[in-house]
Amino acid sequence: MKKTDPKDRRAQKKVSGKGEETGKGIRHVEDAASFLNEAADLSGDYGQTEDMLGMWGLGKRQATVATGGKHILLRLIAAVLVTGLIIASVFYILPRVLPGLFKGSNIELFVEREVNLIYDDSYRVVNKSVTSVMDSPDAAARQITQVLYNEPLKVLREDSDGFTKIRTADGIEGYVRSSDLISDRSSVEPDLHEYMLIISDTGKNVMTHASRGTLITQVMMNTVLYADVKRDGVYQVSLPGGGTGWIGSSGVIEIAPRGSIEEVSSRYFVSSALSFVNSTYRLNGITRMGISMNGLIYVCSCVNGITMPRTIEGQLEAGVPVPLEYDAVTGELLIESIQPGDIVFLSSDIPGEQYEPALCTDTGTLLMRSQARTTIRLREFTSDSDIASRIVYVRRVFL
Image (cartoon, rainbow, N blue to C red):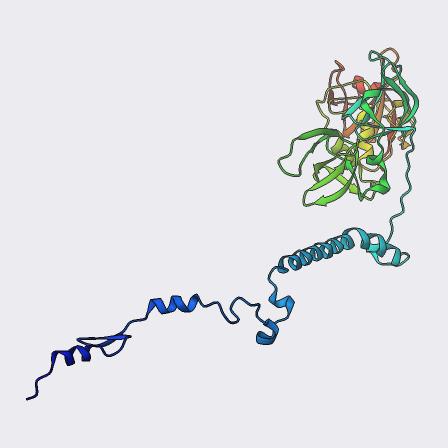
């Protein structure tokens, strides 16, 4: 057998400069130094601008990254301008252009409402729940009547010692505290609103919100308000001074802004009047906070479709006269001839007062001032009673 020379064994181990023998074969090892030598070679095209169009088909716009932010900003500005134009068209331009294009058409959306203002600068509006009308500019003067919240009044004389001389719509002249009046008249102009509301309850609350609001004011029977918003069970009403409030629909009569209340039967008139039983009596008062019989007859007639004067003298001429019938034998009054709803005038024993008004609520029963002149009470009477002997006139307004 041929022996191997040690030099030959060393030669077999050194196969090449890039590998070495192992028990499992040959493992190649990269020459790190050669890589560094290649990186250090800066000759040729290294570091030159690449031709993006020739190699990749990209133009300057697609290949340039730095200009992308400018284009995004321009697109954002364009989007904002388009959005602003759309909003302006919907809320400003179209509402002004379309009515003109469809003017004279029968399309309800574009029918222009005719506005005829009733009240000029000589009118003021009551901004208190109720205020007194006095016969002279003095807080201690005699009360002629009262006026209600949102009631328009004609000014006859400007502020004098805290009072303004006014005339009511039904011709009553007197003095009202100037602080209870306001010059803004938008809350009483019918053509500026959608609904007219007449309060038929003895009183209603006006609130700041439709639900869980706070109290703004209280309004009394026969107060007239105007509304523009109607929801389930509530109205948003216009208030003196330009504000708004919310009121429940119960105890409220809704009619057209220039409409009138439909006349009803005497039964409803009597029902309205009975809501004031045991109320405090007040000379010429017209609300539950203090009311007279002529004031009661006035507000209860108005909310049931009859225009009624608020003075006793005016009520003596209202409706039609009812002939009084007497028993042919006894000469006593036949009380059956006086029907529920009739206004009864009794002679008065109070100095300066000729007649005392009352209201028949049932046969033989009158709603009238108490004997102590402190409250409004129901009193029964018979043919031979003192009350029957005092009856002078009877007028029938609800036929």
